[in-house]
Length: 356
Image (cartoon, rainbow, N blue to C red):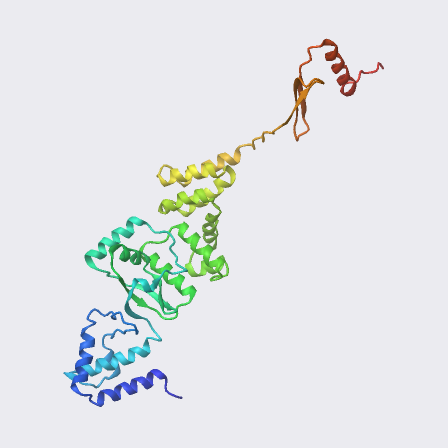
């Protein structure tokens, strides 16, 4: 069985160690290592690599680490790491202008106050936790760390520390962001509804069952979460302002309330929830009241026709409705005309009864 590319590169690297290159070459290698004391590759046009701890021992277990020999071992680790980058994650520091948002991000709503709080923390202590990213078309696409990304911009810092996972799929971009957020500050139900609807619409996941499998949530809860998207836009806008105030059960009851009572009532209830003046039970009770109310009879609108005499003078108004109702009001000052009209109507609509 032939040797892998990685094994061949390791053999070549080991040969380079035993060849004992001149001292000035070791000095250049040592200078390269010392320029990256924090473990992050410097920003360069070509991809820089991080020397993992103890990688020299893995490559050259019998090599004596003293003087120039130790530098040579680190050089071997650097060469080998360049190959291993194609297989596993690595750290780097990238310009913010080269980083894109995750198109399949689990979180869709961000609180401005938290962004500014995190920016102050980064100004004081630096970026303590790297973001997670992949590479697409030469650019870094965030899988996780969007709050840090936004905070770095607010803090006026031009680069971001990243743990880069090459060749992540669309599903992996979502899964990494979902897991990272769940470990820190879970998405709100509206976050999930927006993300899941987009993932299904774009074909990243085929249906609700696939979402349930990935997230570990029950299928009924997935369906209830997606039902949030049935709320009208004015109500959703109220929820977006303070999503953490709306539990899944509350939002589901709100969708049922809007269905029976309309968006005005649902919007008023959503405002009360955001202000912590109402809770899930209040929404459920309001829905029950509207469901028990008899349907209000819809008011009909009539069509009106002006009545005039032969001289063009107004006599009154004739009204008719779609239901079939017809009425009119007319004023006839001439007694003879009035009697003639009454007799005509009686003849047509109230014929005299014949005696038995």
